[in-house]
Image 1 (tube, rainbow, N blue to C red):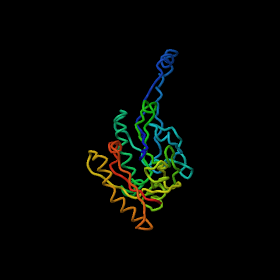
Image 2: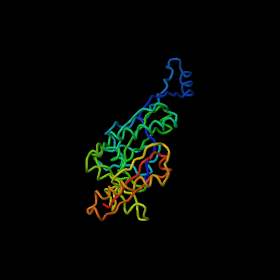
Image 3: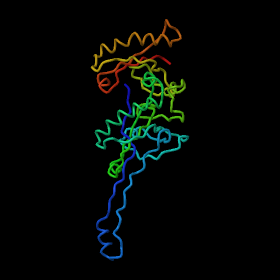
Image 4: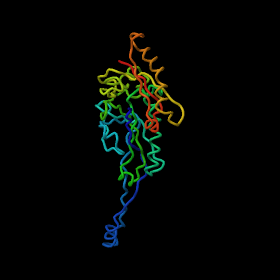
Amino acid sequence: MTRVVGALLALLALTGCTGDDETTTESTASTSASPTATPTPVVPSPPPAGPHQACYLLDYDDALADSSTADPLRCREPHTAVTFFVGRLVDPDPGAAQAQVAEQCPRRLASFIGGTTEDRRLTMLRPIWFTPTPEESDAGARWFRCDVVAVAADGKLAELTAGIAGALDRPHGRDQYGMCGTAEPGTPQFDRVVCSRSHTWRAIQVVAFSGTKYPGEAQVRAAGETPCQDAGATVADDALDYRWGYEWPTAEQWDAGQRFGRCWAPD
């Protein structure tokens, strides 16, 4: 089942000030000629680099974290994450911040990687996000950062190319970052992998559903049989002898927002 990688990220805010009251008191008491000590401002760490400018070498666990302290790389170096948007948190409350970035990052990813809604549902490209660390938040940081990663396989990220922007507008990008499988979906040997890895099956079409209430497994399963069979015939070398597969959404996936199934065919 689709593993959606997700986590929180961030953009900048204001500075706070702090002073050492004990030191200030001693300083002004020692001589009337000494000026009162000026409080030293605490400056939050700078925001991440702007869109299209920051790349990172993250592992799978890094991508699931709420915050990131990884140093940015030049994008010509090997990397697994690319920043595509940096914004400001409207509300620093953790719950409100999570809701804001969980809405904005997936929406903004669409315009960054391109393609149609179906194209994006047939790839292993996923948005992740980071917010400031508690220390940065206490210092006044109010940013969030949206990155894109490609899930190579369960628990692994794929290396990204420098051309990730608009990748799904190009046939090569849709092929490279597509969703593939190591065996027929539903079999014990099946693992979901990015299509740049060795594979034998490919997700080729989406079966979308409307409504907010889960229709039930029988209905979502039956709804995909004809379109997936037709899709399998279209890509087969022999329209009279071919195989096809269908993954329908479970109730849990439906509640998480996946209200579509996927058609598969040997590749």
